[in-house]
Amino acid sequence: MPFLEIDQVSKHYRVGASEPLKALDGVSFASDAGEWIAIMGPSGSGKTTLLNILGCLDQPTSGSVRIGSTDIAGLRRADLVRFRAETVGLIFQQYHLIPHLTAIENVMLAQYFHSMTDEAEARRALEHVGLADRARHLPSQLSGGEQQRVAIARALVNDPKIILADEPTGNLDAANQQIVLDLLSGLHAQGRTILLVTHDERVGRCADRRINLDYGRIVETVVFTAEENEDFDEILEELWMRRESAMHHESSHFTEVQRQRLFATMSRIGLLRHIGKEVRFTDQGEERARSVIRRHRLAERLFMDVLFIRDDAAVESNACTFEHILSPEVTDRICTFLGHPKTCPHGSPIPPGECCGNGARGHVAMNPNGEILP
Image (cartoon, rainbow, N blue to C red; front, side, top):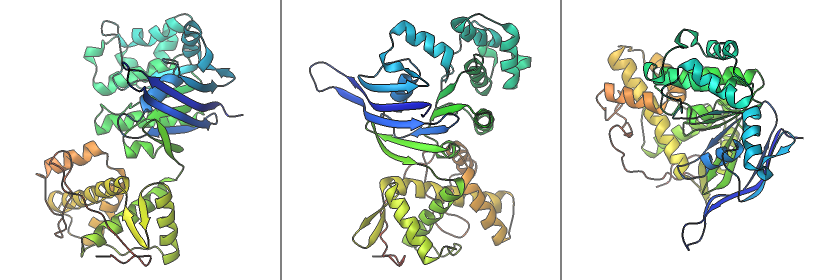
């Protein structure tokens, strides 16, 4: 039996006499104990609503939510509070620390709602996140990354069976994002069940499985390795560059059979679409391709203009690595540092980002042989 099971869960909000707003609409999925699931999707797709229901902060309009042997959808409010304290660890984007309590007191607050406070246990939780020396500091005396780590310690102190995290890296710089991801990866390695809401593709790739929501419904469940995702990015990059007739790019290492299989998979998960014999980007595929191309070409600029690496092969190899690991925040910082360059060192255009304005977006069409169509 799965550890977590959501069956036909809906959450509706009625505003006046109008039709109810469907924040969630018949969502169903299950999770084994120890699985890490990333919940992704655009703003307003129902991600946080789903997490609030799983965290016993809200109840569904209909459907069942079973965690372990308990159907929390039918619990009374007082029972929800008790179940949450004993079973769930919550990590929020905004930290939600009490400003007049020290770090250790904020952690002990979670113990208070669970059973009884234990300062030694609270200190061990802070040690786990590397903040033992900051135990007596107020939140205002901590950096954003340190506050988030206090929030993680608070979520862990009662040894929860499931950890729910809502955009835990959303307000952090690149260095603190990595610290938080390393902490979550360590918890995952311990066998903790983690459900994490994120907009960040890089964070989503850390999970065992990704569930994509849109308009309150699951539109796709994705289970791919990092290597498979890199293959998808390579295909998207290839299609983008063929569209713009870029002269400088490495040739694809895929066989024709591999390429056709990737086309089929990417169509199934919503990155590409077929119109007759043509292959086109979907909006999601277009956005991901833009991001990959932008990261790659900005990395080329960085290596050649700042680090003065002149070996084309070395630049290409390093740029290929960077295109898979740079977060959106770091990419924008590199772009700003370089003065928002318009082209890569070889003259190919760099798609603009939020830090420099968005450019027009078109669609690419190819025949089954991978040839660009007019």
